[in-house]
Amino acid sequence: MYTFFADNKNSDFFFITSPEELKHFRVRRIRIGEKVNLIWEGNLYTAEVVKAEKDKVLCKPLGKATSRKPSIRLYVLQAVPVDLSAFEEVIRICTELGVSEIYPLITERSFRKRDVLIKKLPRWERISKESMKQCRRPWFLVIHDPVKLESLSPPAELNFFLDSFGEGKAIKNLDFKGASSLSLLIGPEGGFSEREGELIKEKGFIPVKLEPYTLRVQTAVAVSAGLIVNLA
Ligand code: SAH
Image (cartoon, rainbow, N blue to C red; front, side, top):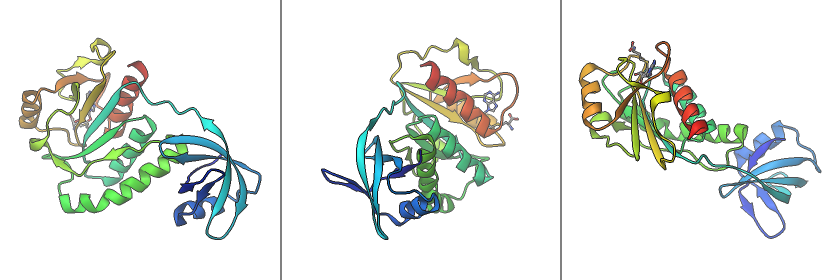
């Protein structure tokens, strides 16, 4: 079953009216009578397509689908990789894993042009929305404006730093059960500098090590956020 964003609702129908969603609807060649999933105001619904016009599609609600939220509020603080396509992958991964908020960080070895990153925000939001449809997540990933590492404060109840220097605790030895929020600070492809490593610890982030080797940014995000969401 395909998923779309509904743009409006009255007592009888959902309406799909936005050009992007109408385009997606046509590309999928959906027929009258077919069932679809609809994302509307943070919930996922099943609905039946009853009418498809040039500028709107009408769907009859059939029911609310269950759409669980992770028990923990997860923040990913990700130094933007120099290869910006890796950051796009991080956005998809965070969307799929139920991460609540992502902060693009500027560090010594990250992508550093803030004005370029600001212009990327609409594209990142689009990527996250596509991913929401793919994984049927009905609530938005908050994508913050880029922040410099120096001005970052630990945002959560528990704040972890993925430390490829190798001094951190193993995930299995961390106690995060019952925490309401947790942040994961992750470096760019080239890692953090030693000076940054010190600064991060001074800010109160707890070093965590993933086994067994040095991971790519995308793998580090997927493993750490994936484990925490599934074990919390
Ligand atoms: N070039 C760096 C690796 C950077 S990997 C080096 O040789 O150390 C990018 C980021 O992913 C790291 O900054 C870290 O936050 C995270 N990461 C990768 N592998 C990791 C591991 N095994 N344990 C903890 N964090 C890791």
